[in-house]
Image 1 (cartoon, rainbow, N blue to C red):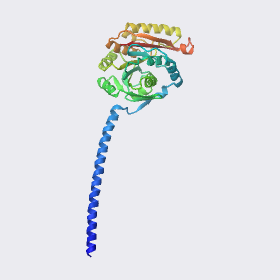
Image 2 (image 1 turned 45 degrees about the horizontal axis):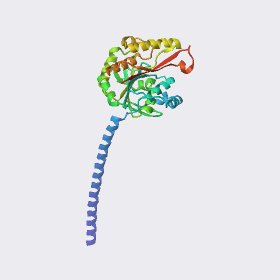
Image 3 (image 1 turned 30 degrees about the vertical axis):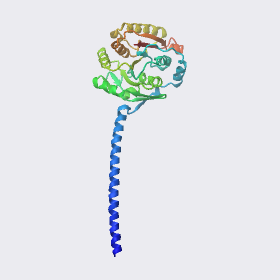
Image 4 (image 1 turned 180 degrees about the vertical axis):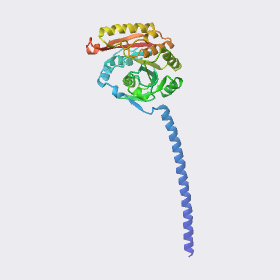
Length: 313
C-alpha cells in the first residue's frame, strides 16, 4: 500500500513536470514562430521595395545571331572621350550594329546607374499620353531591373503618366533595347516611358520639368526612335535631312507636326531635346546614319532609316 501511494505520488509529480515542460516548449515554439513571422515581414518589405513584382519577357524581341555578331564585331571600336547625357538610337533590330556601337562606346570612366528609356507607343494603347512599367525585363543575357522608387515618384507627380504593364510588354521600342542594357550596363536600372502621338508640347514640357529634379549625374536618357518610314532610299534621305535640320534648330513645334515619313516618334525626340536643354546641352553629334537598304540592298522598296545622335556633357 505504501509503495502504491508513493508510485501514485511519483506519477502525479512526473505528470506535473511533463506538463510544465510541455508548456515551456509550446511557449518557445510560439515565440520562435512570432519572431520568424516578424523577420519574414521585414524581409518581404525589403524585397517589395527593391525587386519588381514580375518581369516582362524580352526574349520575344531578341535576335540572337544579330545580337552576338554585332557585339563581336564591335570589340575594336574607339570609346567616346566625354560622358554621355543623351542619345537617339534605333529600335529596329536590323540596325543592331548602331545600337551596339553606342553602348560599346560609353566611356569606361562613366558610371551609369539609371537609363531613362523613351520610345513611341506604337499601338496607341493605354489611357494616358505617357506610359511606364514597374516590372523588370528577363532577357537572354541577364535581367534588367526598374527604378521603382523613381517610377512611383513620377506617377505621383503627374496624371499624364500611368503604369500599364500590358502596354509596355508589347512595346518593342523598350523590349528590343532591354537586352543591350542587360549586356552593357548590367547594374543600371531603367525607367521606361512610351509616348502617345496625342502628347502635345505642354505635356512634354511638364514631364521634362518633373524629370529635371532627378539626379542626372549617373543617368543616361535614351530615345529609342526610328526615322523615315515607307519611302524609297532617295526619298528617305531627303526626309532625314529635313528632320536633322529641325533637330539642330530645336524647332519643337515643327518637329511635333512630323509624321512617319520623317520619324515614328517626334515626341520622344522633342522630350530628349527638352531634357538636354535643362542640362545646358544645345548641340549633338551625329555618329551614324543608315537606312534599311544598307542591310538589304533594296533601295526602291519601302525603307526605314536610322540615326545615332549623341549628346555629351
